[in-house]
Image 1 (spheres, one colour):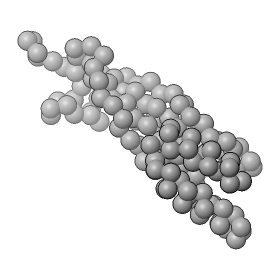
Image 2: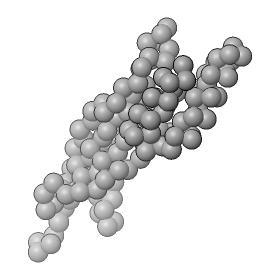
Image 3: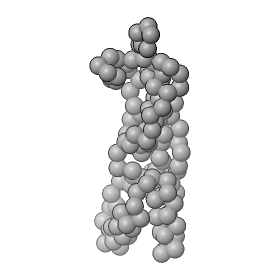
Image 4: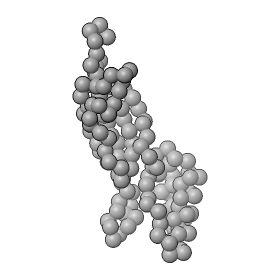
Amino acid sequence: MGSFMTHIECKMARQTGLGAWRLSALAAAMSCAAALGVAAPAFRLIPEPRLVSIATAAPDVLVLVFLDHDEDPPPSQAAAAYSVNGTAPRQVGRCSATVYEERCVDWRAQRYPQLLQHRLYLALALSPGH
């Protein structure tokens, strides 16, 4: 199991940006819990949503890219949920995709933790001349 965990640690560290020491501690805690007969905590590839980039798709479209685990709901597409310089966007579009899927961690529930990428497209209401 040692070489397998090392491979997972390296792969996850590359995919998620987490340090290998944090992943080693997680693996050790999960194996100790299993040895003691304690239910393992919910397995998440990253603990919370993470903004990874901001770009523009057009002069009036701002693109926000988030990574998140599959247990959180997808980001809202309601324009009122966002504000750019104090103004809500005209429209919000979203494209979500699985960018990484871990091996099964719970055979009964068929649980395969996933790392999701959400691209939010905020259509801004620009005034003339901007």
